[in-house]
Structures are given as C-alpha cells and as structure tokens.
Image (cartoon, rainbow, N blue to C red; front, side, top):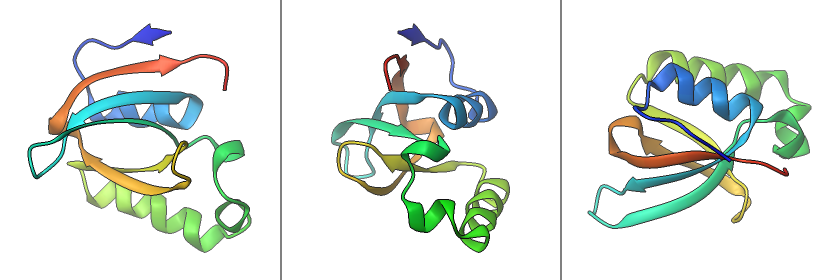
Length: 96
C-alpha cells in the first residue's frame, strides 16, 4: 500500500493506469465517498478494451477535462468520476 502526498492530476492519472487506487473524496453534495478505482486495462469491461473508439474518447476526455478524472469503480462495476481538487486521500492498493 503506497500513499501519495499531494495529488497531482497527472500523477493520479498515471497511477490509475498502473494500479487500483482507493480514493477518498468529497462529492459535490458534500458527502465523503471512498472508492476503489482504476484505469488498468485488465479491470475494464471487454466492451471498452475491444473498442478503440471508446478508448480514444477516454483519452480525449482526460486531455480536455483537466479538473475531472473518469475511472472504473471496481466495487460497483461502472464508470464514475471525481474532481481532482476534491480528493482528501488516496492510496495504491496492492493485490489487484
């Protein structure tokens, strides 16, 4: 388990592509949320892995939306997003 002090958007995005991360953030409504998420290919749905257009859309999204990260929620099996400035804590989770 590795903790990251200070949450640089580019570093978090890089970590998401290589690891499963547990991120704690404050939702827009003020609630705190803990989510295990990733952008590792092996955890993403086959429909995404097999569709170059969807992969390009995700890359374009992250290039044009500098404040928001779209991620795959491991526990709920769906796409979610969070604002990088709302992150309270994150850690890399080993064993995935």
